Length: 258
Image 1: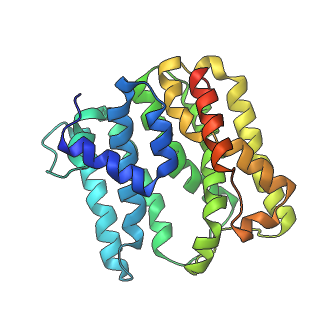
Image 2 (image 1 turned 45 degrees about the vertical axis):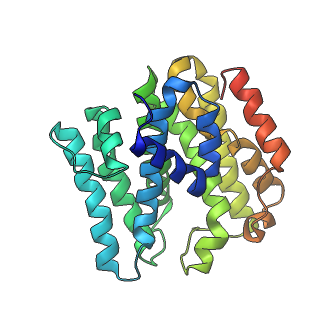
């Protein structure tokens, strides 16, 4: 698919709102970029929806709009005109569009200020958001084992979540079940274990599908930092230097690895 005005708008949205995934997409093969930009632009939109208004009803309506888009794509009928929904409808396989609904349902947590009920609910949130996005991308690009992709995505989602914790706390949300240093270490180690398990099953993910996992290139380093110095989570200092960030991505992309 050629880059038309809609896909160009998607790429620009990702570049400004999700620079890490933008870099990962630019490191991907050219043929994979239209789908990835459409999906990542969609992810920006659905992640913003709960924060669009302090009125919970308006936020719920915005999430419902994306649920309706998912149903339209899955149904194979016309998809309403929108600079993100239109290319998404053209590029996302119908069966994978069904994943949009649980993603939107999980995002309802962002609207309210209630804590997660338990570890299972927290895990479902990470899987529905990070896992759903990465599985849609991977399965659209090639053959892959869903459990392996979602396991890797859990670690990626967890690393992104930990980086977002200071902002979530500032917005009066309760992002963790156990925010103590020990609790943070255990959670980060859980993410590292999921990543390690996924990499042991690397052969179950084709080279084409593996392009989608490149977006998680920083997760292991970020989670390792959280294990070694959990205070960095609250300080908002997780992450690599700009040089190491780009260099590590280039190294993985050159090896077609994740």
